[in-house]
Image 1 (tube, helix red, strand yellow):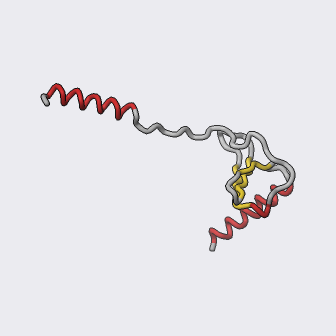
Image 2 (cartoon, helix red, strand yellow):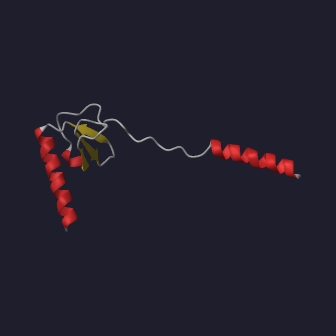
Image 3 (spheres, helix red, strand yellow):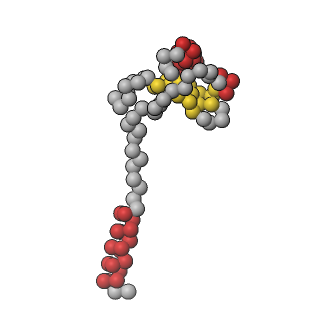
Length: 99
């Protein structure tokens, strides 16, 4: 192969690799809970509680629970039982980090 052919091959490879470079995943810049579930909370199937305070991109407080089967539910953070659930989860997390 002569120099011209090698140059063409290298430029072609460079074009292919630059076109397929990894793209950054956009950060989620909106609320995660468009609507919330009210009513019964499946306490027996509860795996994790995530309490998200208001953030720059979401003015709402959000409570997301993960069930043992992997499903996630958004709960009303103003509900009395949800407030108790968040308080207990926060207390458990703090006790676990102290010990």
